[in-house]
Image (cartoon, rainbow, N blue to C red; front, side, top):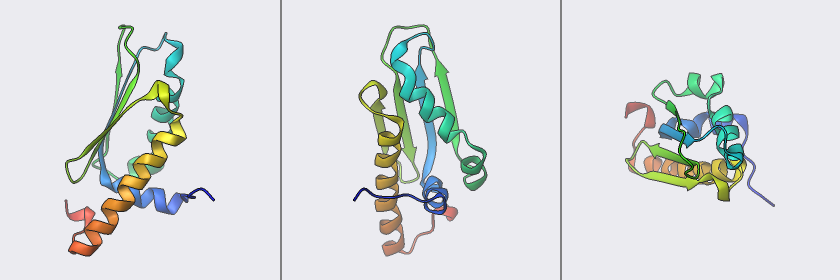
Length: 115
């Protein structure tokens, strides 16, 4: 059974994400998942839960493949070439990374709100 992320869980896990950079050409048909992910992470709920979150939409005229890059509170980055993923697949990988980080922070006695 696949992992189910509730709104409450995602609202907590988004605190571990510092920046999201989405780079795409709006006239390229390969950008569907990048644009959908941008729509989802620009929601008011995520921006309210994590006031430090910066979502950057880099719109280019280059024929490069669309990319999505997540930067986390611990300094790690996760990048996707979004033509190979659906928006939900990218978010699920981000949630898994954030859950691991949440566990590590809890074991070390850290709080993401303090960072």
